[in-house]
Image 1 (cartoon, rainbow, N blue to C red):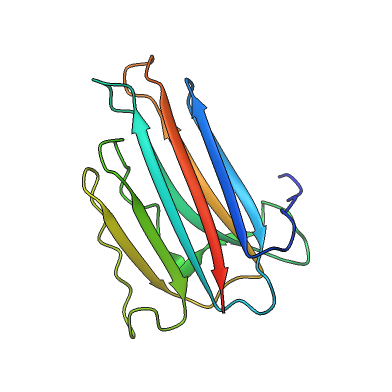
Image 2: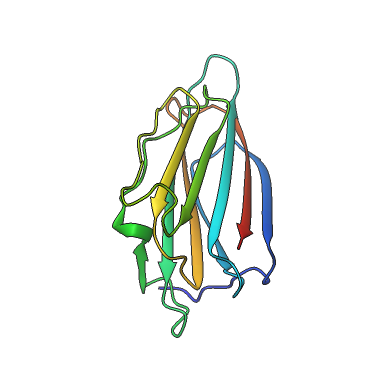
Length: 150
């Protein structure tokens, strides 16, 4: 259990990172009060000949306790398919009615993918990336962009 420290209330968030170790990173974002939708883009690259994986998940935190022990997955959706660094990009959109009445959560491990979750945005949104090296020596780089819109 740990207290959640959220980033400032703004319409966008960007992180670019390179790592040589397994990590699990959650960025906690306060949803702006005017926002109805969020658009998230993840680009992953790996050193040639290696296949570390990146598994994304989206979380909703209790805005009163602000503790990571009190979270649920957005739209009750499990982790998505791990990205093995060969795809150029993944795009996720979350919001009410983004694809009508059904979620579109088909995601490839190796091809560009566009995922849609029909859910009301949580007050506190967690974007988790679990990064795992497969042979122990890969280097991966990722860029995560989050954009809230009305």
